[in-house]
Image (cartoon, rainbow, N blue to C red; front, side, top):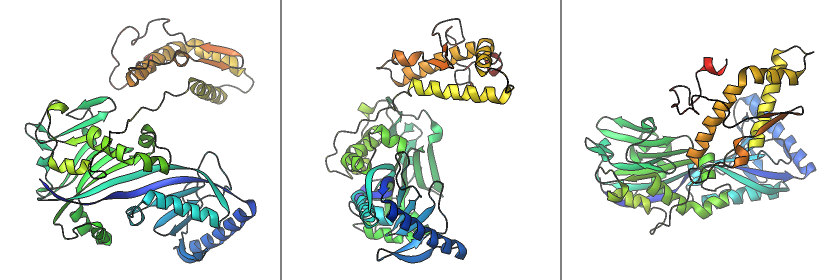
Length: 420
């Protein structure tokens, strides 16, 4: 398979939440108007067309979790809740599909749309959070998509990074790589899932089966191309955070570097099986993919793990769970502190010591160059003035004695042993 031409590069989908502060009277008027229109749509069991600030819009008959109102305007779907101001959850949510996202400077245009909306409704934007984005490129090729573009009897024709800091020619998680075929041709090759996923698929076949999207051919430099492969990367919130991307502005600034990471470090298609990346040759098709956003790709973005959870927060969570368990299982007249201390002495000492050892091993494995801070190794849980201290090396456990974790228990001792 050889590339013939780059047809189009851009964004396919975007989702972001915005934090707005409304003036009280204007917010009440907006909520009253939205409630009235939503009730009308609910009675008709279908969206209704109306006008908002002189522009046509569609009011949806139902909201979604945490957002009571839905509006469609300018190829955007906007979700709003009733909070005039919030510091924890965005009170305006924007979803941009292909008809909006494929336009030039789509991220900036989405920010501009929300800015105009806020001005019309006398609100102030304080922040935003980008939660999902799909980066794509369409390339014309000389033959149909086939499974042997990725695998041969001698081995795989790609190198991938299945985990941060680990690079292999074979996936550490085989179920994350899938092939969707139709007859002799390959429709979709996909890699990963959830927060980071890559798909390479036959775009012309998709448009043939979904004629409502045939307008996408107008994006191409050659609308009559016979074979077109789309390479698409889906990035969601957790992965964006690993790149240091919080806002739409962050994404605009780092997009070329993130694309370089995705097409060089995360996945690379090669000409023949190789056991080492340095000995492999990148296919001409994949070179076109790598240069989709810039003719000279920048250095790849750096992707890092989320920091270890704060020990104090985990200790407070544990205290809350213990208190609820005691409230459920003991009489109201009993002393909850004595009950907790009694259970700790009887059942939990071995379990806590063993599981603390296991979690330390995980933290060290995730951050091999940065050992876990000492203040996070042995947090004290304080309940009603009593301090429960997890002693790091007291006693023997299957893990502290050097035994390997048992399959099915994720490193924990068997259930019967842990609860005795």
